[in-house]
Image (cartoon, rainbow, N blue to C red):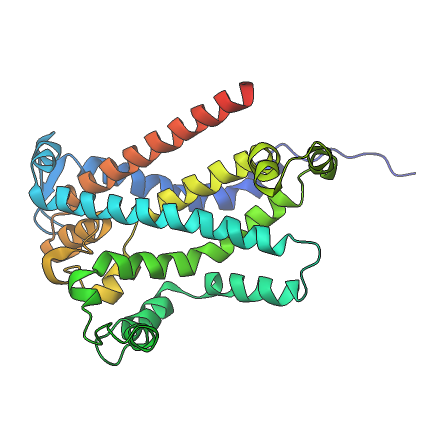
Length: 295
């Protein structure tokens, strides 16, 4: 019988050392450096001047920043407001016990989430073009009065972005909703049905309270992701966000100030304002979710 030999004290540190090193180099240090840059004005990577709160004071009166904030909030509210109901409806459809071909439908609905945003932008860009775009062609075939020259990117930029984002993200959210629906106790549904509750009443009074934590989490994740809009708008509309800057987002402005203008200090201030706003939203959502559980 072999005797137990304890591990040396340095063994746990050796196992976590790779993570600690990578976290310190690629996460902690960049965060601290960006916080320092937020209080500086940069003229290239070699010249920095400490300006205190000047970047934040200028940010408060910067019309281009508030234009980007308005666009980003509009995109976020529309996308979350459409993406969550669409994903929930798809999950309810797939959760029906008598549905045939459930695995095939699940694959079809989920597959857009596997596609990279570069491919999504390249796919939707020609679809919304004038005359040759499939969207205008299909709408014209269904309704002949619809003009083939309908200006999606010139006038209805936000609509095109929202549709592309909903198509991309609804499938992944559907999977989480489907998992939550499958954990709703069947006894509660049967009892509600025996009491005479209809499908809408069962959903509102039984299903929705049971999946509320997942609904809140998915809404929060979708909100945070949409507030970081960059790749989709940049690839579909360019660095200006189309004519009039209708698709110009906060992260696009951050990128423009940091890597085009070269003022990394002002770009860091923009990033920290966005980060603090998202942390506040997450904290508020957590407080509301905890209060609902206590009630």
